[in-house]
Amino acid sequence: MKRMVVFGILMALFAFTGCKKGPIADLVLLNGKVVTLDAHNTMAQALAVKGDRILAVGDNDQIKKMVGEQTRVLDVTGALVIPGLIEGHAHFLGLGEALSRLDLTHTQSWQDIVDSVAARALQAEPGEWIIGRGWHQEKWKIRPAKLVEGYPLHTALSKVSPRNPVILTHASGHAVFVNQKAMELAGISRQTPNPMGGKIIRDRQGNPTGVLLENAMDLVWKVYHKQQSTNPEKEKMRYAEKAMQHLLKNGITSFHDAGASFAEIELFKRLAEQEKLKVRLYVMIHEPNVRLRKYLDHYRLIGYANHFLTVRAIKRYMDGALGSRGAWLFKPYNDQPNSVGFNVISPDSLKATAEIAIEHGFQLCTHAIGDRANHVVLDVYEQVFKAHPEKKDLRWRIEHAQLIHPADVKRFAKLGVIASMQGIHCTSDGPWVPQRISEERAKNEAYLWQTLWQTGAVVTNGTDAPVEAIDPMANFYALITRRMKNGQYFYPEQCLTPDQALKAYTYNNAYAAFEENLKGSLEPGKLADIAVLDRDILTVPPYKVPQTKVLYTMVGGRIAWSARK
Image (cartoon, rainbow, N blue to C red; front, top):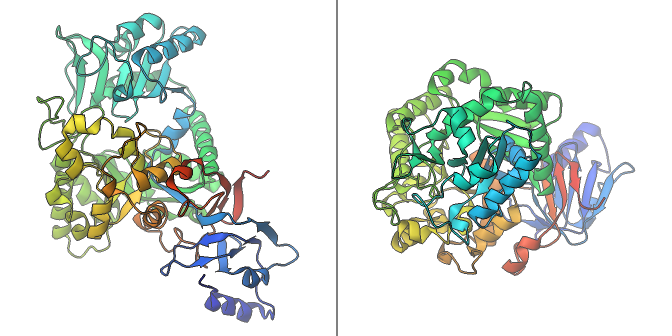
């Protein structure tokens, strides 16, 4: 085992305090396997914390010298000590909202969904909205006899909920299923045109089936939000609290929020000022270009409230999702030859956003799933980079990057574009992806983690919660095995090694947020954001990884969650 003590920092403390015995820690962890993820991949036994920073890392004898009368000492008895996990792409309030609503993630048939809504409708007041999320038609074991473009009709759903408008969001977040009552309130009928960048699925007679894709979802959400609570901030505060509790329980200390409004950022700012933010947020702004031009500089925050809130990125969507066939492809879908998906904004619109971002010093993070969407985003980025050669270290990102044409793979590293990917998407979607896009494209284009890594691209990891569960151990397992629930493996040559997977979940996510000097590794001077696990996920047989438990989650040197109460 390598030994590490930060002599420079310690000597500075000696000089400042005049102390002969050295600095005294507030918190000490002993008898662990400390994975520092520093430049030398140093392994250690123990770690000391002073205030909200890591004081030193080394062996037990070294760190014990920093124990004083007031030092809290934790003997972690061989547990794995790692940097606090950083969720690289998810939706903060969306996670809290999903934890508060009808959970459809485990439904295995359309009838399961209808039954779930029927049970909720019996408890609901007339006119009360029933909101759910998590269904995915490709994961149903039993399918209805009558389908339109792969989706059922609203008839059964509307029958069990005649008094209540219903909105059920697809697991991907890129489609909703609504009942007749919701469509009536939204004015959706045979005559309603498809909005730009969206689609109303219709039967042969032209009647809406209840499925709304991409921008068409706004038709019902606008009505819902108009009728909702007179105190939406109180509701969002409740979502934030639920999300934070759930994240800390899972060892997550930082969170990249992939799309927040200015109003939501104001909420985050108030929470941070009141010291109610328990997880550090890195926020991407999702607002129209006209509002970005007017307000962007006002909302720029770097390390606000002791590094609990940073706002320096913009979020855009180029296309939809594979599950809803909204991902924008070069070639038609294998199971729907008349469709290549679609772009939800124009390349010109994205370029306008890119110009705003580069002018104001903001990172641009663009959702792109289909191979054509990724290609177009890379083109736009490259055009803007060439037009502004004086701008360096931009670290712009493509969120998801699920399908990449082979000709575009090396462009990520060449342009310095970060591939912000989600391991769990691969194993969750894998059973139906070859059917959707063909075996050849699935093998050569889908979830190319290792290929991108070997080209020198920065690959990060997240869950896209609430699209998938926030569970980092399931996600880590997906990264190192690509084993699907059916027991098969989705082109395992693209797996990451355990060391790569941990780096993608910690240091690389810190780098993607310009925060690698503050977090992502356990080094003196960095924030003491730490997770302690009950087993060594780097060396145990992979099948044991999903059962891993978080023993402690520490944020800024404070124990924010403990399994040992």
